[in-house]
Every structure is written in structure tokens, then in C-alpha cells.
Image 1 (cartoon, rainbow, N blue to C red):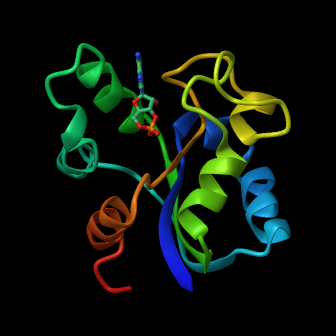
Image 2: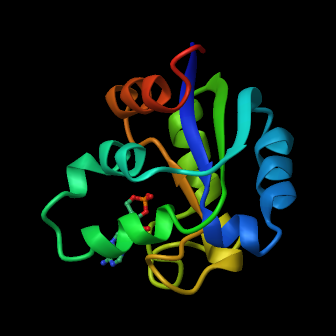
Length: 136
Ligand code: CMP
């Protein structure tokens, strides 16, 4: 069964010129791009996207980071797309958790600057896709 997930290339990934690398890996895996947009992220969208982290010690710096530059947002579709992209991305911590061969494992060093975001469940995917792409 096909499902959809929200993928972000965060400001560090865009700034470092890794958009093509991330999109290439998504496409080579066999996942399809349903929507794609390079955009600025306002404070309100950032707060809603990361609502589950409100109150955590890193919430303020997470908001500052995600609003600091352009973000590539995409809706990605395919069989088990949520898990498939999370496997491509690697674990949240690019050094301790992300395996070499994953996006974070190959290109990341710090947990905050971990290059990409992928929805973590069908419920999150539905909520995040509505938030970023209300028209899709
Ligand atoms: P993401 O998958 O986008 O979801 C929440 C984000 O919070 C995560 O990636 C990291 O960028 C960030 N994050 C998680 N843990 C920490 C932490 N301990 N310090 C700073 N940022 C964090």
C-alpha cells in the first residue's frame, strides 16, 4: 500500500548544496515526488511543525535554526514511504545513531544540524503534509 511522508531539507542542507543529493537518493530508492517547494519558514509554521518539542531545552534554538534560511519541503510517496525515508535519512544523531550510507551518517555531525526531516508516523505525516501543503 502506498503512503505519503513529509520530507524537509533543512537550512543546513540547502546552504551546503545537498538538495540534489537528497532528492537523488529519494528518487533512486524508487519513491515519487508529489510536491516540492523551496521556501522560507515563518515562526508560526515552525512552531506548529515542531509543536511536540515545545518545552524541550532545545525548542528555542530549533525554531531559530529552521527559520534561519530556505528549506526544501517535499511530499514523497511510495510503499512504506515513511519508514523508507527514515532509513534513507538515518537516526536523529548523525554520529551516534545514523549509519554510514544514510544521509545524516554521510553528511552530518551535530544533532541539531541533521540536514533532513521525515515524518515519524502516519499521523505525523498527515498532520505535517496538511501544514506544509494544504492544497495537496
Ligand atoms: P527532526 O527529525 O527534524 O525532529 C526534531 C529535531 O530536533 C531533530 O530532527 C533535531 O534537528 C532536533 N533535535 C533533537 N534533539 C536535539 C537536541 N538534543 N539538541 C538540539 N536539537 C535537537
